[in-house]
Length: 112
Image (cartoon, rainbow, N blue to C red; front, side, top):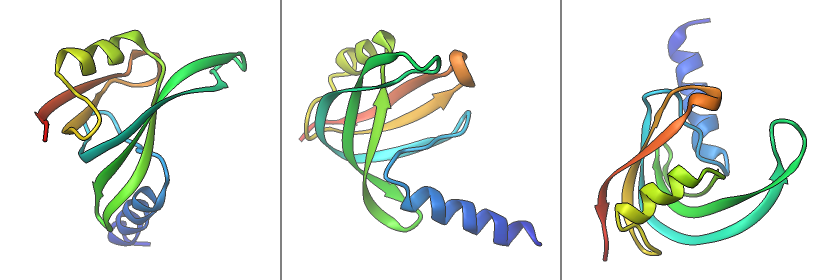
């Protein structure tokens, strides 16, 4: 199987997913942050934890899609606050690192 088929398959699956999924060093453009809510979900160890769920219109290879992005870290919430992200904002999110070393960087914030 050629890599082109695999690449386009992966790209299409990522676009169709209801969640934002980024590899280390990968970015995506949030066109508009629609909602932020608190949700409870299972953590890595199976324990329940509160996370922030961001619901946003995101640019994908298949066009604009509404997607969820969950994050339970204080540092990510502080990054959003420091960059002035609010409901209605557009911004770029970039992943750095893997597993427990993962952090997300916010850039190019546009507030309407």
